[in-house]
Image (cartoon, rainbow, N blue to C red; front, side, top):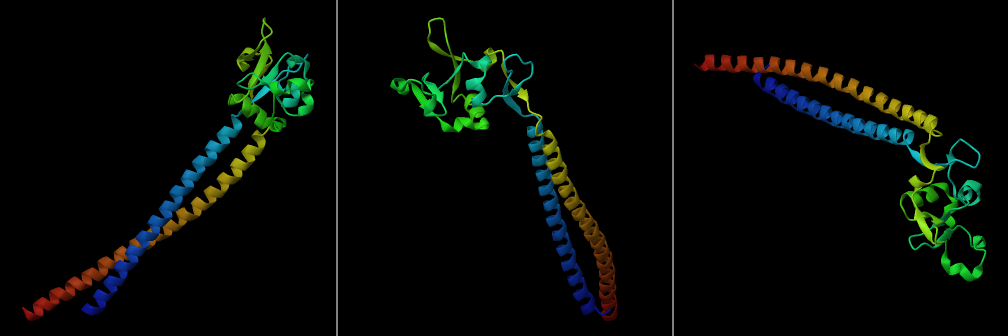
Length: 217
């Protein structure tokens, strides 16, 4: 191989080496994104399996069940409590719950209370409060911790579905990562082969230069 041909081959191999290194960088970046996604999935799974919901123990029962607005306003064990806002106005889901229309200014109507999660969030976020009459017949706020048959308990009703979702998503990520890993292995093998050939061509170039100097020396 002549000097010009060797130099052309050297340049082509150098370009291939740089391109291979760039591809490896791109794949490494994709693997990093997959790792970040897996952390998000794990966090999501942890939240779903460690979530707590407001629950209550119905009258004459030892088991806690999810607390809904319907239960709050109908269960005998909670009959002494009212849902109130920050101004101590009674909050109801429907105007039909106001027995005395002349006192409607003392009420707030919020139809969203019929949605369990909304009702729960409204209490947890302190948008609304549980109220009860004190010894002076005045409505006062009661803390959830101070009500014996209401508590936050772990909700395991969605754990099985969360586990299935977690396993499926993690399997997809692991399969994608395995493909990328194999591709990196292939590119690294190619990179080593290119480096070996570059060294060989560089050796030919060095010999051609050396012979050229010897000829004109």
